[in-house]
Length: 370
Image (cartoon, rainbow, N blue to C red; front, side, top):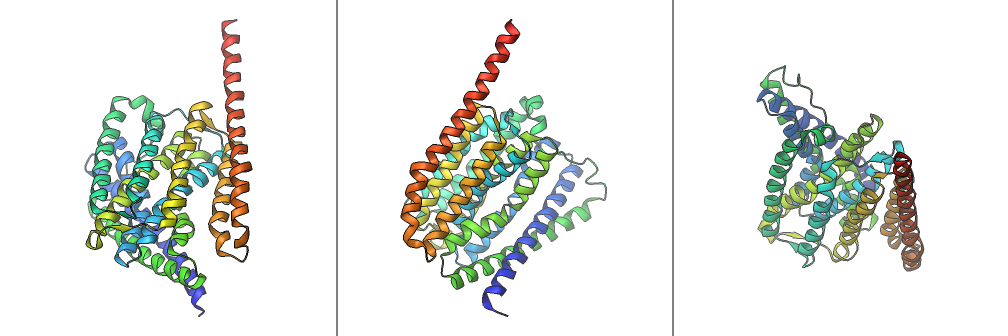
């Protein structure tokens, strides 16, 4: 079998195993939580959220174990970019997403702050184990804060979390434990297969592990978030579709990157490539910042804005791939056109959408007064 075909098959099998393992892990964990009487809101904020980020975590840990630090870091960065641009964009194309949840209003500024902090941590070329410990401590604090504030405002957060089947634990704790164990085993195997295939493909294609992590691996590990948000959007649960994306981005930064840095403590922490610091970490921060004008000006993500997010992701992928092709001489011109024409055009569309929305609100208010 040709080497590239084998690497491709390994990547596809790895993604499939991660998806199946994550589902087993989540369902088993939910069943155990129900058996032990944990409230549904807490399950949604912890077990389900952690479970959807399990593929990213296992891939990053497996990458560190196999000496592929670049893949571990780029997987986190690429997943966050994919979540905001593709998952939110695709969900908004299904149905315009209304932004009314307390979770979104509180978590978006937090996501921006942590994204900026991670960029600062990585700017020295390494995410140290001390930085990883700080991120994990932030995860614990944020989780406690989430649960406490959600309980204080249950009416506002009720629709923002996934529904938990109260009969999930009816088969008893033994099947639930077996599902959790099976999920961990499948996740471990899938992550190793995916990392092996991804590193092999990078070597055969002559590109860096960073590029593979930013594109193929990050898209593959983000499939649970994409499917969850699309299903939520089709059911009209737009708060869940948005909250899933924002929550996943926070977990990627706090749990996945923090856990990877701790795992890499033996060789000084996670090494971060200069191209990731120069190009992709700023893009990750900008995608987080882009949520603010969209969420806070019109109070929703329209289909037009969803299409713009998807289009921007395609431009980002082309920007990553173009310098590695025979058209590499055009990469500087491509970036100049994107910077001078595309980005301003996108800002004009977002501002126009906001103005139209606020005029409608104002007219509605004037009619009510009349």
